[in-house]
Image 1: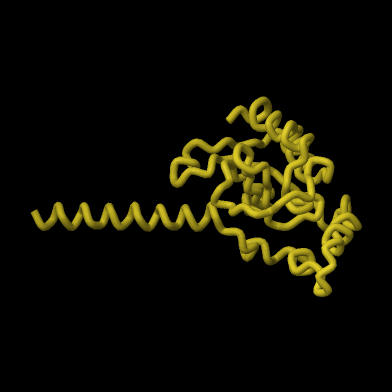
Image 2: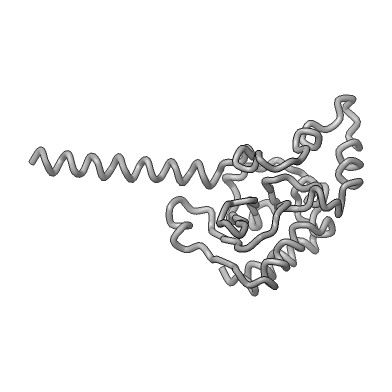
Length: 186
């Protein structure tokens, strides 16, 4: 009896640990895992010290298309797209390795026309999808959280000024829906 109770306890502890590790991995947004890359996240996220609201927009706009700040700043070999569902998302994720689809997705996230300067008050735990970008060595080099249904927002690590404040424009919403429904078929 004690042996069964001990086994059940270890199983429950194991499931709990795995759940929280998965939760932390899905919702980590601090950019630490991408810190080996050189970019100026702080300059963009701090904005203007003089409270000039135009400063971030001007700073972002000046860097549209700048290869130094394009997402994800490295060659992409594979993209994994998963629903933001604890544990199950890893089992149901879609892996994209076809070069044309990878290029379409990267172009989508690097085109400022797909994004708007709208409100940014949402949390990445509200996202429905997580896009994970990997290089040739299977190292995760970027991550995008996408909230389509309730807010039309995206958040990326590493940061890219091409995504403005993360709000999807009307064109961006159409293209994201096309991506999700036709290309990836989630």
